[in-house]
Length: 123
Image (cartoon, rainbow, N blue to C red; front, side, top):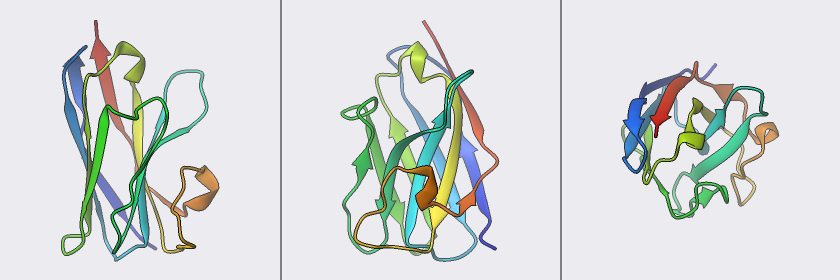
């Protein structure tokens, strides 16, 4: 069972930046961030595969997020820029050992989940 440990998050002002980190206990093929705000479904926001840098971003964060991965440390992080109050959510790290050419931003693509870290953006 792959364990995912998240860190980062917290509070920020609108227009500011935050970085979220996730470390996996084992090597995995895909790592991603999802988020869930009150009353809404889980939304995939960014994903990255091992071995090839081909990041994916949701439309809501495209241009405002950068996802990177350090293979040796089994760590992935995402920079969130130009934060908006609507970015307020609990952010979850997810991982999968499966890779079929694209990691994707669908919940069904991921088998392992972190506990979540809260991001609060104030206006």
